Image (tube, rainbow, N blue to C red; front, side, top):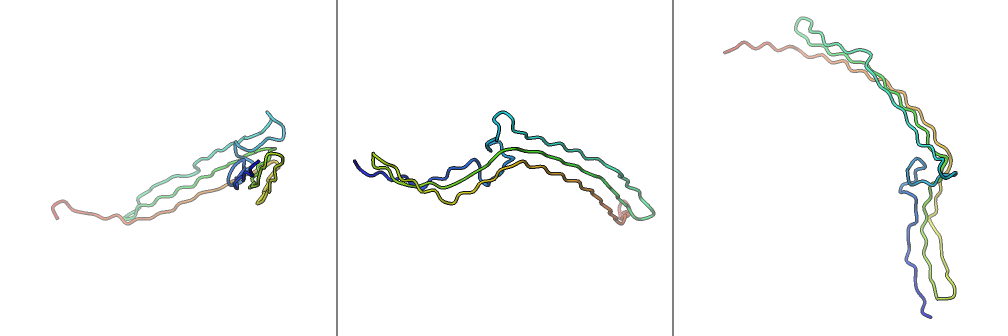
Amino acid sequence: MANTNIPSTLIATNQPLNIASSQAIPYFPGFAINFAASSSGTILSVAPTILLWNFQADAGWSFFAGLAGPSIALNYTAAGAYDGNRIALNVSNDEIQGGILFGVNVADTGVLEMAEVILEWPGA
């Protein structure tokens, strides 16, 4: 029987690897956790005009927390040959990630601006 080559083929859950992706494989089918919560708010927002200057002051906060997994993500390249009786397959460039991922981000924001008021007289 003729020898058939199997071309180099990428087999992957996702590119780049990410255990938080919906294509990742859960350790326990039906029990993968993908949860995120976020919130943000304004602490201060004022815009006074004092003499010939406009001031703008803003301050705020944001919060994000997320949980993903437990799951695995993998990718590898497979290539080989098949002759009817046996198959030879070479696997290379294999990568795997697994586990549970938890992250928290807390941030504050602040803006302080000052602009000179320009007076223009009509018809001038």
